[in-house]
Length: 166
Image (cartoon, rainbow, N blue to C red; front, side, top):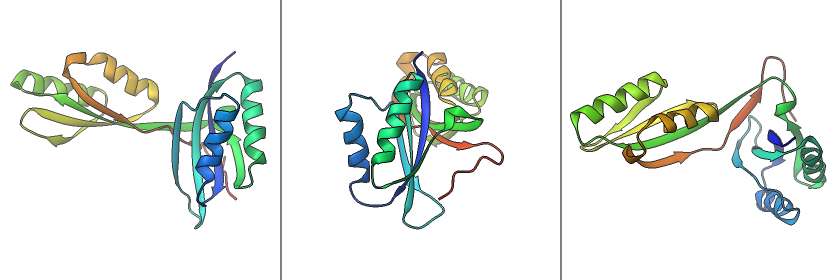
């Protein structure tokens, strides 16, 4: 059965690493649902978090292919165990009336978001949480109020003593 898997890879921080990873996905016809890249606690090492959709066999094949790439130090499917996963979303909404301003502030509060920018006719709201929470926020808003949406890919980390180090 196809499901979303969150893969986290520890990689050498070298030019072309992301290109090689994306190329491997493209050559084999796999899609990356989301991608997040950032530095780790070690100089010269980065972490790449990829969300992919597939059955267990497909994801195992993706993992094996990624392990063959020279710049990959370690890869793990976070979905296999207890983990924390979060996304960040910025939403610019229309607030040209007093009622809309109040409604948008109330919606942000309900979803534990924050209004981070206030302009004459717009608010920018910041939300973090699981993707399902961010989706629910967007569904709860009147579509005509949404002017722009920006979302990061998922970031994830193992819970408790589950640590991925080099």
